[in-house]
Length: 326
Image (cartoon, rainbow, N blue to C red; front, side, top):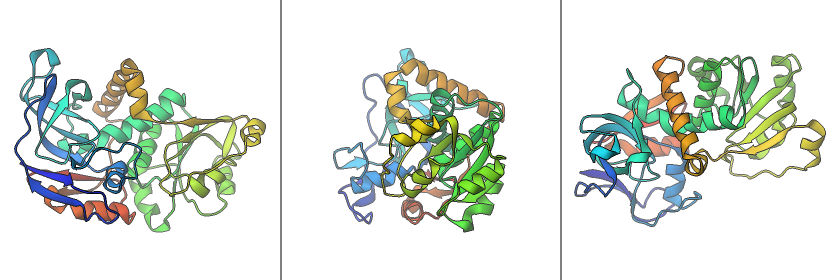
């Protein structure tokens, strides 16, 4: 089978290669899946450089998440050959087959195709854990979503809107605003450059944001402290800007807001029952048509470099999905 391997860490993908490997044997307690689609996430890019907090030993097969069909499984796993599943396990998704622990898989939503299912998992789990599980999102609240052109940002916009909240999406690139508006359908799109509090205040009628969902960090986080409503939540999701921000603790004290760190994968590992409940809630929303993953492009795995480089250049609006075998 073909698999995308990180043979050495490098800043320019020079250590990454598509190569032929034997099909993996099913590990004890695992499920063997034929991968039909696998989506690219920002941590996948960071792991090729050794810049992500999880640092697998090289060489390793890249890819966090996929959707596909079960080939082999123990009856006790709850899965059977032919089942359509989605999931992942930090690495191994960018291959034609993957052996994955049964508890890392879940049934695909009915009516959803493989690319959409592959694009939904990690992004929507992160968005749901942050906005609903930790943020307590309710209808009519204002949600400010930064980095709204990325997979996680678009998922947060889609989920918040699907649950009846009002959404302001931001982007660092004015050229992406129209595409974000078409895909995410927020109440407003703001270009987050310099001081943008006044724009948030204008859109919300002075109420500001009940939840700020921030995968960007840096200057965007700094300005976001001015955009949170009293009693609101500023959600730390990531640092795609490259700078980890500092905050003076008198600011949340005076404004009465909470700074909440979000690690959705770790949350699900520590609280597996809640993780399963989150996956079930997302699947129900998808089956009801309340949420739909945004996909920028679907590529054969042989064109993996196209997807990785587009992500590195920040060209994407939505997820890249690879189709193994192509």
